[in-house]
Length: 602
Image (cartoon, rainbow, N blue to C red; front, side, top):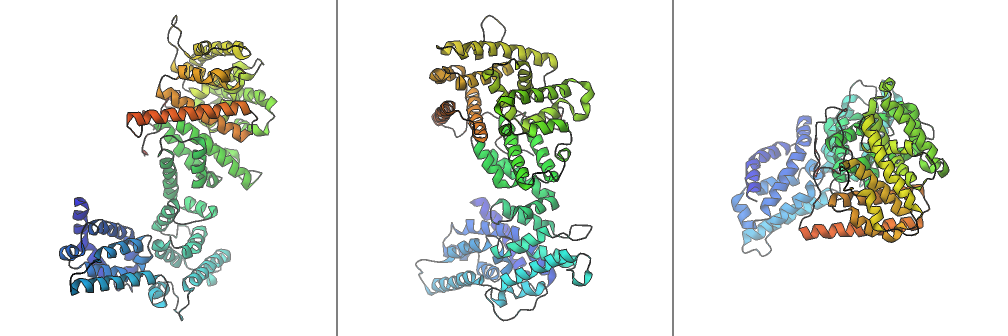
């Protein structure tokens, strides 16, 4: 409160002088200065309200004798009233001046004067000719008699003129000059949140002239993007795509805004991630390769900064899925080649990965997985394929289509055929791309031993939790297994519990044995959520397995929530480690159960 009062007092005289200049906003320079300062002035109004709401009307007049002049000048300025939430904040400030029980004639006069200003504000947006006269004149129009739809008609006229301008091309006799378009974009800055202005905003965004440089004001793009992100304006996807293509800072801000949403809650399940992604319009806009590449690079940066956090991997996978869906809706045949979206990847590998498992008969999944594994292995381990970027680029491409790795783990447990070598390699690579050939081969040996043990038990009529615990637990007679092997063994074990006939009865008991820490519990919650999400998208018929997965997920989530409450904290999640992000060849410890940081890091 004290700091707000100090800031307000220090800025008070500055804005008094500004308002005096703006009072006669008849020149182009004055109008431009008004539009330029409106966001800062609105912040000043917010500060003023925070100060005034703590004082009674008498104290306000005593401390700020000229506040009446300031508020009156503000109320009669149509640019200020039209800008964003200024009208609402101004009403709050005026209400602070009203004395509910006036003790003398001076206080009664103040009440009457204040109510007069409130009445002026509330009636201002009927858009009388007098009040929009300056706006109309600045656009080159002559006001006519009062018309309730004046603003709407004026906007439609300007939209028609812009579209005609676009169609006429170089027909200079009928073209709107660039200077007028530029000025039009600037004068629209404080008005972008008005519903009647939306057609004009859209027309400006989608206007493409023949100028060599951008004709619209950067502040116009900033204002529209901010209004769009805060849901204060509704725009068609085509206009949003034009906004982001013409002003890259707006695209970067929109992507960062999405990241902030994704990390704002304790844990985001995949359906929630999908909702945030689709609501952002980024996957749909990414059908344009330039937008896809920028968003994808920002995902890459966050992935490196968070050391391969599972939440980031999940977000990339869901983003790609939403992007592919949008691509299929737009056109059955690609307008751009796949190379424009994935320039560092093998085109043949991209074609295989782009196949949705739902479009492939289930009996052919093993064959497809084996093909994917062989192609990746050849690029990663064969030195002759360096043109495709090496292990990191292969892994970064593969995690976009991470559903194939989940299917591989499931098929390893369920399949009776001998194709485990290719699938084990695929699983080991997807979880730890930094490993060399020898290290990955050792991981495969460990996993194969766990897999053989599980397959022996798959058809067993009697199962015990102790038997299954041995798959994920350490053996006392040998060296501790690497964390990666433990994590992948748990992944195989969880698939076993969901699919083995006898696994359902002992599933909860096994999970309580193999999840001694919160980190492993979160890992299992993520696995169950991702499995249910994948089954829903594949329309997979597995009623018993689906029912068990839902029950386990609900139980684990409830248990995790109750533990947090007992600890008396709103968040007990571990912070992720951070490493240098300036090299794409950085080693990634994907197997570590890290998570995104609590706030966005640029």
